[in-house]
Amino acid sequence: MIPTTLDWCQNQDKNDPLAEVREKFDLPHGVIYMDGNSLGPMPKSVFARVNNVVKNEWRTDLIKSWNTAGWIGLPTRVGARIAPLVGAKESEVVMADSTSVNIFKVAAAACRMNKGRTKILSEPGNFPTDLYMMQGLADFLGEEYELVTVDRTEIVDAIDENTAMVLLTHVHYVTADMFDMKEVTTAAHAKGALMVWDLSHSAGAVPVDLNGAGADFAVGCGYKYLNGGPGAPAFLYVAERHLGAVRQPLSGWFGHKNPFSFVDDFEPAGDIRRMLVGTTGVLAASALEEALKVFDGVDMRLVRQKSLAMTDLFMALVREKLVGYNLGVVTPVKHANRGSHVSLSFAEGYAVMQALIDRGVIGDFRAPNYMRFGFTPLYLSFEDVYRAVDILAEILEKEIWRDSKYRTRSDVT
Image (cartoon, rainbow, N blue to C red; front, side, top):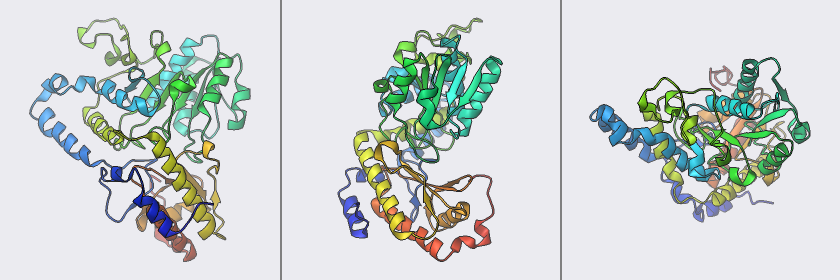
């Protein structure tokens, strides 16, 4: 059993090898931030970087900055920074567009590479944009294509000779249930299917080894555990073995072999840049590039070790302090099956979460009744976790959540 005393938590923080990384973040005073799985906080150096881009690169140097400040190279530079976090080569990852757009691009490319197969396989309850984009892709490709969803425990058995591609989220956005990436990828390849992984709730929080698993494609977002800011650009991965053949449907000019030749006919770039579409949003891309520097010198094995210890602590404290409130822990207990957030089910979860936020503990809510708590080891402390559960216990014990101001739904939950 993991210790659950405040003294133990403080001792863990005192001996935390990642403690100095916390100082790189501009965290609001008095806030326990447990929503990095939705939006990462701002690293301190980002403000100066974006300020320089606005005041000097844009205001003073104007269009020259595409060359003098290296704006043109942002997609591949940022991709190279993300690559080691997802177990890929620098040449296999590029920053581009949004997660949704990237899902469409790589899934369409996979279907094109697997002509004659018309089944797209995923799971019900996958993140909605993944399913929506696959519904749209199937409609776009023609009535012979079909999105099939089966329970996650049945995915491997559902892959057959008609499966063009399998699209799964590595860490489930609600439950934090984590797939064995290598096992599922191997099963897909055994039936001739291609494998696409959504790393939106993995990259920067849990160790990922795309090459070790033999993955074909992957996508992920830049604003969660990578701390790139609201609406930060996303990224995508294409295995090196596919780079020469992969063709995506959105053949925009930044994906051209020579965008500034301004010829009429499209010829894709010979490398990962063929997955680009349009002009880079320089302000957002610069913020993400700067934010990724907090990972310099960080050992992802230590990140994972701390993440598991904090989530173990949180679940132990919930079992100890919150008995009798009809709370359910929907996140797996087994380490191998768990990502880096924990979800609790509660009938009035929305109201409870609003009361928590009002008291400085920021998590989020997912319909119909899930409270999510993100554990980002780079800046969250064990004492934070301990105090967050104490505040949650007070809200439940005193039924503070019953206040009408906590029960009115905002547009964003």
